[in-house]
Length: 288
Image (cartoon, rainbow, N blue to C red; front, side, top):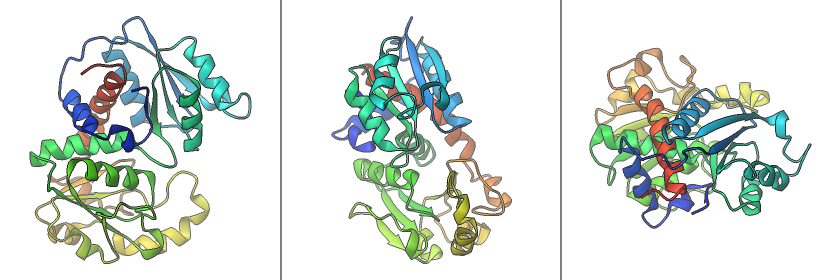
C-alpha cells in the first residue's frame, strides 16, 4: 500500500493489522537512514510531536516543513511538491487544508503518503481512538460510542467509517444542522444529547469552533450550548469513559470536572497518537 488518506484505505482487515502493530513495542527500523517529510499547512501540537517521535522510533529522520516552505498550489503544484520531496524522503506525511492536495500528491509519487489531517478525514485520530477504546473496554466489537456535538467534521467522519470496519456501535448526537451529511447507514444520529449517550461505553466530543470557523463562533456557541458534556450527561451513560481529540476548551464542549475525572482517558488517547502513527508508517512501509 502506498497511501493512507482515509479509513477506506484500511478496509479488508488492514485496520486491525495497524492496531495490532500499534500494540507492539518494537517494529524494527524500516526507516533506518531514511527521511520522512512532514508537511504542515496547519500547526499542531499532538500531530507534530507524535509523528516526529514515531519516525524516530522507526529509525528515520523527520523533517518538519511549514506551509510557506513548499507553497502547495501557490509556489509549486501539489504534484511538483510531492515529486521534489520524493527525491529525498521515503515517506510523505501531510496535514492539509484541502484533502484533494493529498490525493494529487499521492498520485504523483510512488513513495507512501500519509494523511495527518485534512478537511475530509483524520484517520490517525480514529486509529488512536480505537486503540484507546480497546485498552479501556477490552474489545471493539459491540462497544457503544456516543459522539456529542459537531458531527459533521473530519474526526467524526473517520471515526464513523472506522467503527464500521471493527463492528462498534456509533451514535452521533448534535443539532440537526450539524449532522454528518455522508454518514454510513449503520450510524445512528439523534438531536437529544441524553438519548445519544444513554447506555454508552464511551462519550466523545470535540471543540465547537474549529480552525477556520471563527466567523461562525456566535452561531455555533448558541447551537451547541445544550451539548456540553457535564457530570449529568455522563451519569446517563453505562459508566462511560470520556474521550476528546484535544485541544479542549474547558467550560464549552466539556466541563473541567469531566475532563479531569478518573473516567477521562484523554491523555492516554493523546499518547496513543504516537503509537498509532508509528504503526501506520510501519504498515505503509510493509511491516506486518
